[in-house]
Length: 211
Length: 224
Image (cartoon, rainbow over all chains, first blue to last red; front, side, top):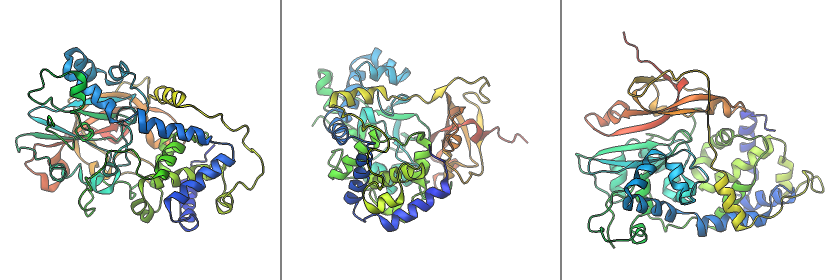
């Protein structure tokens, strides 16, 4: 059991700062070696988790959800009303999505998601967060200068569009539903899903193209 | 804790490195650490204690080392603090006690088992409590002026500010106490803040910032 002793942990961090190798690969190797040697972790299970989040779980899931919502008004409503149940219709409920909320972009509203305190992210539907999402520049600026942040992603927001920033401070997680591009009426769900970018579901992309 | 992790609104971190190849891991060790974090659990740990241990990393390491490196260091710290690993083990690079000191090693899991586990780990953090919510949707609230030395999820930039309750989330595990090992539920709300209320340069802006906040972070505005 942990003692929940923050002072002790601060001391451990200071010790590790001086005593662990400086290369990240060696630090992680040291951790894995100890956990495996102590019989706490099976290395083949680590392999399976890597494969799961490389091959199976990633932003393609979110894109399929968005495409289904664009194609099926009833599904869109279920997604807005109860996102965990709606994504589980596709089998996508999982890590960090039990309290998922979907926020919808419109002509008048643009949504942007951040976690200023750590790096909360809806894993089971978007996979591993991009590096910039976990970096200090994005975490510090998204709540204060969202339009400047969006401009760096090449997204210019009209002055009359309201920007809504969602800071993931609790166990709720947010998925942005981008707007369906014009000229896609005849597209299948599969074709539509191919248009949905990961960034558009975080909010750092807005106008999805047909390319 | 007013630590280095509380980054919202801080200035000087420069432009965002927007280029990304879309892949989940860019180095093998990043994937290893992701996998370790999914299957290594310090017994008795809570998510908030793990987050607090990450916040306690020295600022120079928190900001200067790669992201998944900080996960590895957090895992080291929670295992060592709980007595499942020692600093001597770390120095030696191997357990100093022979044999499987914590019982039989876990059996390997297949991809299908891991995918099922991911699905089964849609952990809910809400629960029933007797007390009625103190605030209702549409009500104006003001946030606490100060934090405290422990773990808390009211960021500095949103302290002492007025907002409007936009949604009621139910009663959720209260992180400040969960980080100390006590799991109680407290009403949690989504609160909308005008950007102009938070930032001096945002006066006249129509933009909004939304945070999910627990009831004890909130009070009724002073009506006087």
